[in-house]
Every structure is written in C-alpha cells, then in structure tokens.
Image (tube, rainbow, N blue to C red; front, side, top):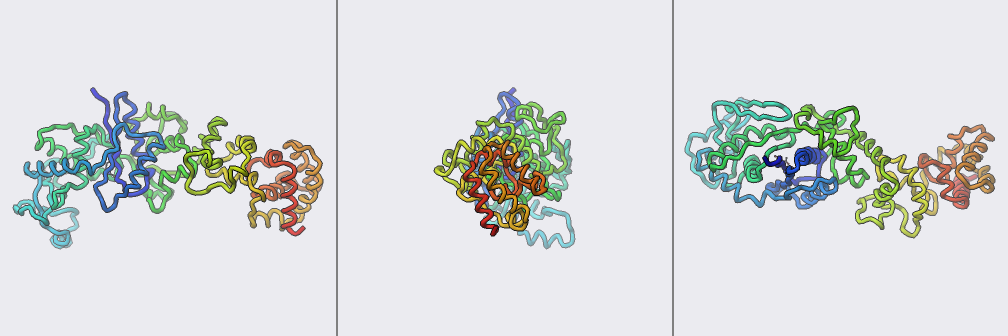
Amino acid sequence: MSGPRVRFAPSPTGYFHVGSARTALFNWFVARQSPDGVFLLRIEDTDADRNREEWVDGIVAAMHWLGFDPDEGPFRQTDNTDAHRAAVEDLFRGGYLYPCACTSDEVAQRKGDNKTPGYDGYCRDRDVPRGPTTGLRFRTPREGATIVHDKIRGDVVTENAVIEDFVVARSSGAALFALANVVDDRNDRITHVIRGEEHLPNTPKQILLWEALSTTTGVTVPIPEYAHLPILVNEQRKKLSKRRDPVAVESYRDAGYLPAAILNYLSLLGWSPRGDEEKVPLSVCIEQFRLEDVSHSPAFFDLKKMAHMNGEYIRELSPEDFLAAAAPWVTPWTSKWQPTEGAPPWTQETFDFAVWEAVAPLVQERVALMGEIVPMIEFFFVSEAPFDEAAFDKTIRNDDKARELLSRSLDVFGDCEWTSSSLHAAVVALGETLELNLRKAQAPVRCAVTGKTVGPPLFESLELLGRERTLQRVREALAKAGG
Ligand code: GLU
C-alpha cells in the first residue's frame, strides 16, 4: 500500500497566517510519518479579485524558512480550470446539476419571515434552460444522511434534507470553490484532507460532489479521511484575526524567532506530545503525532508563550550557532537576509566583532527574540551613549546621591584594575560610602554608560567597553545633569 498523500491548499489572500502554518505542519507530520508519504502544496488561486502574487511568494518562502517544503508542487488551482469545467459538464450530464435563474433578492423575498437558511429549491424542478444568467446548483438528495468520518470529531452526521441545493458553477461554467477543491483532491489522489474547522460545513457537500463525480466519470476515487483542526483564539478567546492579532509568520522571522521554536510551538496548538515536556524535538512530534489525539476545543495562540519558548531555544544554541543566528540583526553585512526594520545604529567600520563575541554569551542568556539584541548592545558600538530622557532624569538628574556616586566614580574608575571583579568591588565600596546597596549604586553607572536601565551584566560590560570610554561617558552624563 502506498503512503498518505496530504495537501496544504491555501488561498493566497493575505500574509501567511499562524493558523495556516499549523494546518500545513499537521499535514506535513502525517506525510513524514510514512517513508512514502507525500506532502503537496496547492495554491487555491481561483479568486482573482482577492489573490495577489506576493502572497503566493510569501507562503512559499515562509514554508521554506520553517522547513517544510512540499514534496510536490506548488501547483496552481488555476492551472486546472479545464478539469473543473469538465467536471461541471459531467455532473450536468449526469443530472446532478440544474440551472437556476433566481437572484439572491428573489430568494430572500420568497422566504419572507421563514428563517431556514439556504436556497428554497425554487428552480429544482422547473426545467429552467441554461443561459448566460443561470448558475448551476447541485440537486442534493432529499433522503438519507451524509456522514463525515472526522478523525478529530468522530462521525458528523448531516441529514441530506437540510443540505441546501448549493451553487456549484457560475453561469460561465466556471466551478466554485467546493467543486474545484474536490476535483483537485481527486486528481491529486489525496488520502487525507486536514484543514481548519471553518471548512466542516462544506464537507458534506463535498462528499456528495465526490460521490457524484465517481459515478458520472466512472472513476471511483476513495473518499479521503477528513480531519478538521480546531480554530485558534486570542487571549480574549476570540478567533484570531488577521487585523487584530499579530499572526503573520513573515513578521516572526523579522522579530527574531527561530524556526525550530515556532514549529515546536505550533505543534502544541490543539495537540501535545506525550509526557509533561512541551519542548520536544520535531522528530518526536512526527513520531507521536496522531490526528485522533488532536483536540476539538479552540486552541489558545499565546504569543508570550511562543516568545518564551523561543528564548529556551536560543539558550540551547552553541556559541557559534548563536552568532550565526544573530548575524542578520547584528552583522547584517555578513548575512544574505536582513529584517525589514531595525537596522543597527553601527556600521561594519564602527563595529568590533571581538567585543560582540565576548558579550554574546551574556546576551544569549537574556533575550527571547533575536530582535532584542541590538538595543541591548548598541552602547558598545556607538560613539556616545544612547540617551533615554526619562531614565536619565529618574536615575541621575533627579537623584543627588546618584550624581555624587558618579562624581566619586571618576577617581575610582581612573585607578582601579580594569576587570569585572575589581569594578564590581569598586562600585560596592562606592555605594557603601553613600549608603546605597549594589542595585542602587550600579543604576546610575549603567544609565550613564549604556543609556538604559537594563542590559547585559554591568561589570563585564564595563570591562569590555574599556576605561577611557567608561570615564568619558560618566563625565558626559555629569555634564548633562548639570553637575
Ligand atoms: N483554500 C482553502 C482555504 O485556504 C482551503 C481548502 C482546503 O484545505 O480544503 O481556506
């Protein structure tokens, strides 16, 4: 028996959304579980008004970045229009479709107060001739029921009588989504349709189309297994929205997420590996993943948790891998790819790689995202300390003891041995003379030298910055504070 053939079938109408990435990933898991599994990418680009080529590029690039390139494709649904039209004609000849001339206003008017959703079947038995204004509707059976054997939800039974006679093709003969999607899945011999739960209401209709096509074409293709993945919700338990929530996978790359962390986090959206550990290698996810274990309840997409997990992945990198992963932000001139925003305030000429290499292990301990590195280390590579007025006022200008400590530090820093441990001892001693604990004593020094209130460990940073530049910045801060 050959392995599963799964597909990811996005419509390129916007950025590549985390929900889509999760769908693609779960499909990819199923393909990777069998040596001959196939993961196919089909771009469903039939809606010319809403599709844009750049969105297609975004999907392909993001999938490549995340590490799940398709085994087959990308294919274009628009390349199959002839097959879709042929299917419309087959179904029409087979008596499954009938022309309908009703406008939506007419349908609504006939309904009056009757709130039953869907089409009332007005044209079903009226022998309306096919013409330039008639769509084609599917003649759904009035008897029996259609069952979706959903791997996640179990059997979902729909009485055929409540499935409206849905429109399958426009008057032009062009197939609509439900049919085009089925025709392509049949041609691609898809064995598992794994997609978002918003498609569940389409599925009984699509099963009816699938069966009808098997009959009219004489080509029986087994109905695929279905699995409808739970929706993703935000903190307020509202469906994630492209407008409200930060959901574009492309932007995560800019922010400095690592693909491995994203994949691990996405795998937890509706599923979890065995045991207590959520941070698990991809190979374990592939091995353990089962559609039957996916939950049907909405999955909370927690950006904070994803960032936290990213930090854990960052800390696991070897020193060389960390430098390499940071290159697009820190040494962009060495990197093929750079984030779209946040170019560093230094150049190759003003940058000192030895300093970066020395401070990198301290930074690696402290960031959750690669994008946080630049503000944390900029004070090393710019001529004047960055200036944050609010921090400066609070920590230096409006604090007499802090200014006094800085003035006294000029002598001490002028003399002491320039190592982090001596600097540490010197600031402790200085603090004692002013009855300041270490935290209070180091705050004005940090602010004067780095311009920030937080950052990498101070004394290691001073050692790397050097005596002259440290003294210079303390003097400048005192001058600025008017003291
Ligand atoms: N093109 C559809 C979408 O993006 C997916 C259809 C499917 O997976 O069957 O929602």
